[in-house]
Amino acid sequence: MRIAIISDTHDHIGNLRVAVKYCNAYGVSMIIHCGDLISPFMLDELAKFSGAIHLIYGNNVGDQHIISQSCGTRFPSITHHGVLGAVEAGGRKLAFTHYPQMARGLAHQGLFDVVCCGHNHKHKVERVGATLMVNPGEMLGKDSQPGFCILECDSLNVERVDVGEPFGRDEL
Image 1 (cartoon, rainbow, N blue to C red):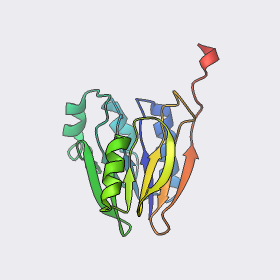
Image 2: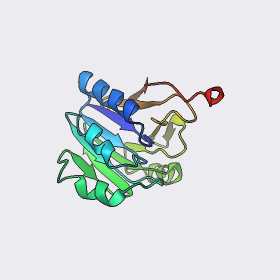
Image 3: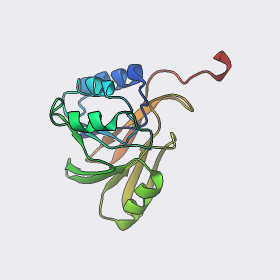
Image 4: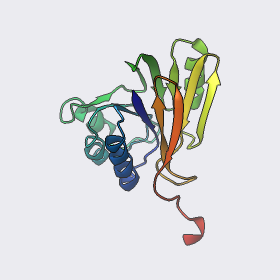
């Protein structure tokens, strides 16, 4: 089973659109979004994915009431977990939060095979004890190359997929 791990889209609709198309084309079964989606209109883009979607809050809150109310009703394939999510998929236990510090604490507990996070916009994959910790980096492209990660559940291999272009500082 292949799972996409996405975070920090910050309303960048173009990069999210590319990621969803990639996921549909390359056999991804589930998307986990680690927060900072921001606006309700982003749910329309996420819902174009053909599989299950799991979403949590980040620290940048747009209209989170509409987002949480729309998940499961208007968008039945999207589950909103609040500030912390956990799922079993592909024979693995996965947890996801927005904050790396919380993710590290969860990983140290050893209850999950994989713990995912976002927030700092920095792509990083590491082992914390027996747990794989994944920060896919940002989809926005503000601080670095936008992209997301694909987790292969069988092998726990993680692949980074770049999308779009980072914002050029000298173009402002």
